[in-house]
Image (cartoon, rainbow, N blue to C red; front, side, top):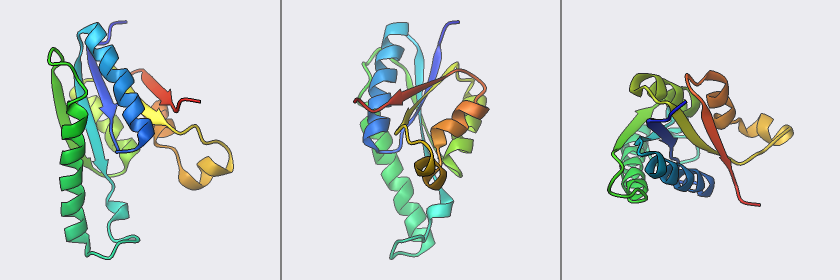
Length: 143
């Protein structure tokens, strides 16, 4: 199987940055196209913040654009990079974007939580692995 289109989930975390580095190197080595996807979760609007939901959504979109611009700088100039900011549940939106863009591979970071930690926190990477239309490269934190 050849990977010509690699979708990379970006959320601003250190583990997502590690997945980005791995996927950017892979895209360069394979001369593949890359796309960055950042999901803005509307369920978080207003939860634990002191600003109204419309302002929070606008701020989240602005932060997402800045995050993707920084992530784009990771790639060599030979790699074609697209960007997607989507709104919805991160796992579902990553899978949906992979389907719509025609990704051959999804790269995503995972903290590697298990048991109770995963039950309370949830796992976007696990959701993506279970529902993805293509192989998923899960990058864990360095140990």
